[in-house]
Image (cartoon, rainbow, N blue to C red; front, top):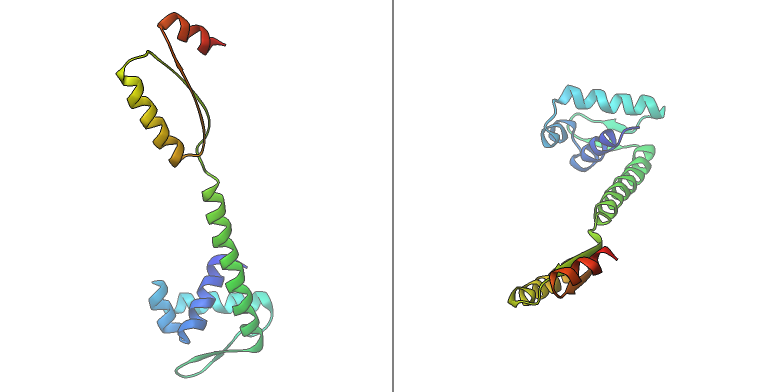
Length: 137
C-alpha cells in the first residue's frame, strides 16, 4: 500500500467523485480508477460503491479513510519533526583583537545565539600571539 495511493483514495472520498478527484489530483480519470481498483485488489475488499454520479464508501472504505488520514497525518508530523531537527549547533571559536570591530562581533554573536540557541560561541580577545596560543589550546 503506497502513501500516494492512500492520498488518492482520500481525495476520492472527499470529492465523492472519481472524475472530480482526478481533476483535483491532475490525473486522468482512467489512471485514478485503475489505482483504486488495484488498491481494492490489494486489500481484497471493495472500498467504494460506485454510483452513476457519486461515490460512497463501504464499511471497509470508511475504516480505510480513517486509517489513511491517520497514516498521512503521521507521515507529515514525522517529516516536520525531522526537518526541525536539522538545527545548527556546535562550538565556534573566534579570536579577535581588542578594537571597535569586537563590539560589532559581539552584537552579531548575540543575534546569532538568539537565532541558533544550539551554538556555543567562544570569543577570545587580545593581541595576535595571545589569541593564537589560546585558540591552539
